[in-house]
Image 1 (cartoon, rainbow, N blue to C red):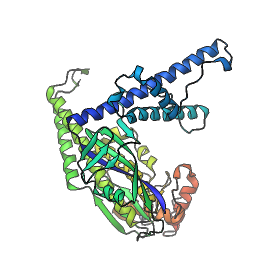
Image 2 (image 1 turned 60 degrees about the vertical axis):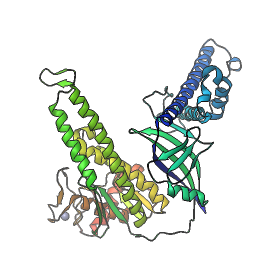
Image 3 (image 1 turned 30 degrees about the vertical axis):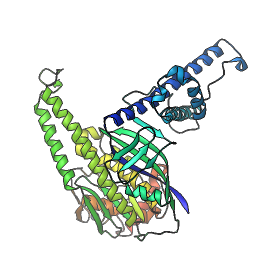
Length: 452
Ligand SMILES: [Zn+2]
């Protein structure tokens, strides 16, 4: 028996006073974060100044303990002075502020010493525009019944969704909740529970063990194919999503006809009309709705796919952003949505494949999954995004573009890295990536290899 971390997220239906309490906790977390950041910054500046006067290290003002525990201790010692209203919120709000600051400071410290990859600057002050959330690790955190959850100080909160599944897991002793994060996101309050679930390592799912390739399309959400060239599944965008996208396009056309902030005639800024502002508000709501719908669809699809297929291959994430110059803005809304969906899909597949005991392979970033002919292996120099059908100049093969890419991805795994769990293509070498991928395809059609 092992343990697996799961997250359960529910949208909440908060009343006026609950909303005020939630906002107060988010604000309390931010206040503690900023207060402690000010203390740490002043302490660092003091020590820096003292050193510049030539004061020996042992006589410097002692450094503030920057651990979560140290910051919390300091907060508790001075909270009455800094925040006489502190008792209005659960102490968890301030503890969370200290915890987050300690993590940010530790990242900064490690990045400066070079023990952490990437750049991590000195923490900035948290603003009201930042992440609106607060995490509880102790106190009353639970699912109360099939529609309600309980959080410290906020009490019993109604969820929009059914909470039975998590409730059953906890009540039957199969799982325990270790923390809860309350967050305001896209106009709604959510609670997300971190859950430790006991798993039986011997439980095996029945599924296909040979590799499958998945391509994310513009027209259809996903296409799943096997290395034999057979289409296994095609998941199209649900009708309500297509409708929402049509409505969004109509709104954008409407906004174009209205008086916007830019006057093309005089090439100057101007005051936009109230009609334009109203349309913009509707556009942003439409965007949020589409993003929610796509996410729901992706969740359902990835859960099913990772249960059905044990060995999944997808395109490398970086390829998406590089295919066209100018980024998503230049490629239009639809393309931007597809790219965002792809990033989400890749993340969901990665953790769900792990839960299901399967593997997810990301093709080498130089593997031409879209441009390779799944019939003969010839590689096209150029393939426009508008070309929905792949037509091969060598063998005359004509095939749906997304299916063609999915088949190539399924074969990628068979040829190069079958069964290597968590393979990451970022470190892969360009030559070997292409050579082995091409090597697989030359088996089908000798003489026309993808190898340069
Ligand atoms: Zn061909």
